[in-house]
Image (tube, rainbow, N blue to C red; front, side):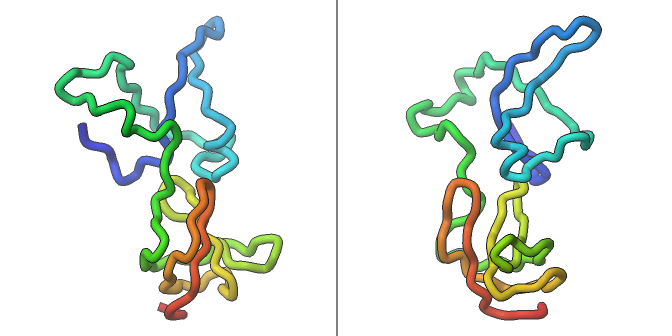
Length: 131
């Protein structure tokens, strides 16, 4: 199965009956990490919970939550979209994952090295400015 590069988040959910419509609940963590925004419209793909044996993998190796899309030591080009409460630059990459970039300003495009990775954010150090 191919997964689109435009994938914002991936989670399991039940489809519930809400009278004249059916509802798929988005986990709160997807909103908190910035992957999706309340009130916005998204395309939804549904995949059967019955996994084809030929496509299945060893479930012991599958993490229960999505892994960060960056690794420590990785070099990235990012655009600073916002400023955090501490005055640091904020960039967002795949699935809305946040990279905090100290010393960066809104609108800057910078080359960074990822120095620290957490489950819901990373920290990057500027290598080159104004790319």
